[in-house]
Image 1 (cartoon, helix red, strand yellow):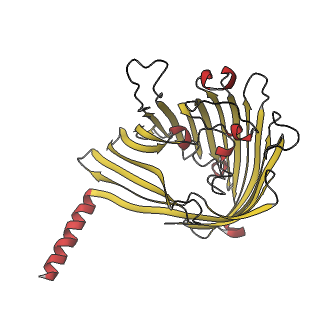
Image 2 (cartoon, one colour):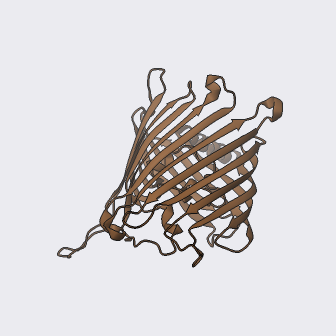
Image 3 (cartoon, one colour):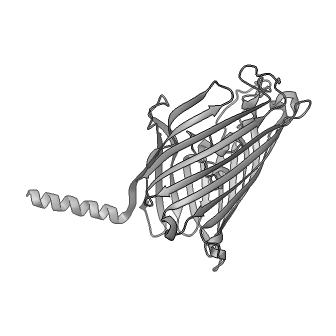
Length: 375
């Protein structure tokens, strides 16, 4: 009887697996030991950082020949225990997909502008996010209340693939009838178009955010920051390109670039009635050493810069970061790495003598060693 029951259970699970893809458990633990020199504090600081370590569950359920249900939920994990909370929200969604057309998702997701960067930022999440390009330029957002549509990847008859993405996040704030001077929160809109050609080793994307959260990195550099309304938002466009030069005969080399402009969506929500404008770019490169030298070894370099104009008598704020990284991959899931990067911040609006921890020119540099394990 027990054998019959076991056989029935295995058979039932097998039928369920045949109708579904997943659920799949996945994740990564990325931890580094970082030596930090910050001009705004005394001496050096040594930290153990959990660099957006995470785990999640995702999968799909076949409904008909063409329709499938999609789902996914992901949490950030504080491996070093310093965040004050063990788990943090990342992407999570449920949706429907029609084969060959696209998918609709509802939930909390990275904006299309954020995902368009692909892997151009070699310091993504490093030093608990403190070397991430979000410390230089705006637009690295994950937003709530999302209604998203993603097209299928359309094959261009041997000339690569093209995909379009659009999402809307309603403001979800109502205003009582008869209220004077009160307005609701504008919806966030984000879109992108992505072209990929694996034969040429080419990736390109153009993306935009409208009414995105105000995340100008230059604001944090002021001794006394400009007055900015809690409802302030940004309009951003971004252009990204990556090319693997191995396809052109330059073995192991790939180069990446990103250019972007972010501007205040409504000048009335910023100091002096002037909508600030941030112009920024990033370039990075990767060299994978041949197996004859050491299989799994790679070297990376990156430079990023932003210039933010706050208008009026306020002078432009400039942020620059340059860094390099060496990785050694034992396998596709396990690697060790070391890096050094320095960020220079120039804000001529501050007093020449350091006041309240702020100065006209100050720097932030990090040397770190770490390990990543995926599962």
